[in-house]
Image 1 (cartoon, rainbow, N blue to C red):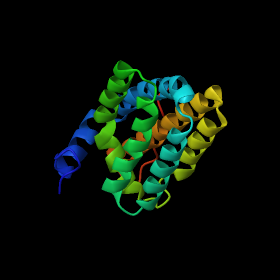
Image 2 (image 1 turned 30 degrees about the vertical axis):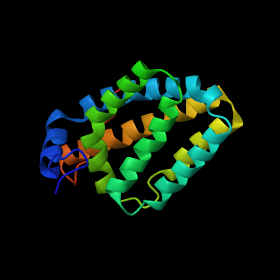
Image 3 (image 1 turned 45 degrees about the vertical axis):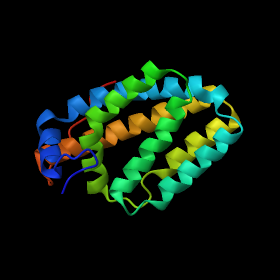
Image 4 (image 1 turned 135 degrees about the vertical axis):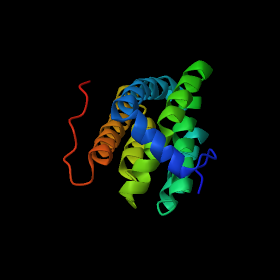
Amino acid sequence: MRDAHGVPRRVAREIAQHLGASYAYEFLRAAAALEALAVRVALPNLRGEALYEIDDLLRRMNRAVDDTETWIARHDAFHDFMHESSGRPRLVAQIRQLRAAVQPYLRLYVEWKNNPTRHGFEHEAIAAAVVSGDAGKAEEIMHGHVMRAATKITEFLHTVRAGADAAPAPIPST
């Protein structure tokens, strides 16, 4: 079976296990900073029809909780809409490069977690902060959202590498 990028899942799993948790954490930390910046810059553009689009993207993502591939695609679409609304194409390109680098890790984690809620509450909180118009809050929530993912994925990778019975190694310091 292949992932959305055509990479066999077995290969993606081997890459993720070989490169390791510190690699994923480093990229996710950078993504957290850039995604938080993107939502702050985008906030003035996220009014009117854009708010309906955010709501629609969120509902579509939440309807896909039982299908990992569809959920990840819709999750990315939700984040992409926020980033693209910043009007900063180089910032969007950097975020996409970071996301592509950690995609195998995210995919493995989501498949392993098999969590039907897929952390939807965090996306709801991001949307609520955008609707409120509070740029600082939206930035803080987005940063926290990506950093929580970084922590969870890193813990997962440590567990996978150490074996299912081993305790997760500590998360790298920020």
